[in-house]
Image 1: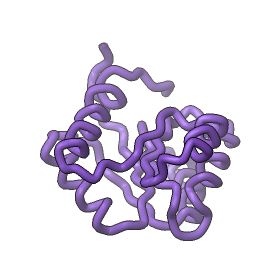
Image 2: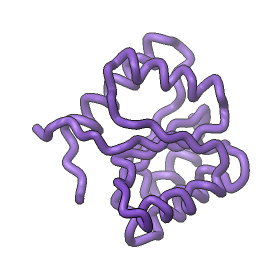
Image 3: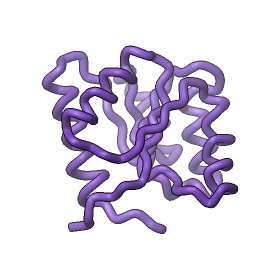
Image 4: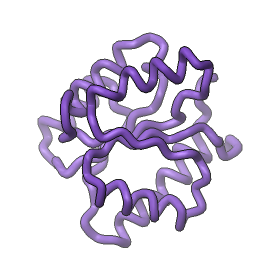
Length: 143
């Protein structure tokens, strides 16, 4: 089992409410990774490129909503996975869409997981706990 990482987590979410609930749940689950939030799809690639240029740690996980302002999450995913220096960053799609078409398209474009946003608080708690146990504890990421 890998040691819990301290790499940042990037949450791409345009809903203030959805982000705030995730942020609260991350704190409740004692997830200490720094959280970055972007609400506009057009900001994601420049943000990641800037981290690289400044020799700062890239996110250990990107939680990506599909229906965001600007370039939508589907296109953001394609662009991340098309960039040789970014494609190894795990991208967990987190959307209200349960469309089989969206699920298939995201996996075809390199998504590492796809989850439908839970509406029930206890299911959200389970979702965040699974992020902690899997992505932040068990997974070994390339350096």
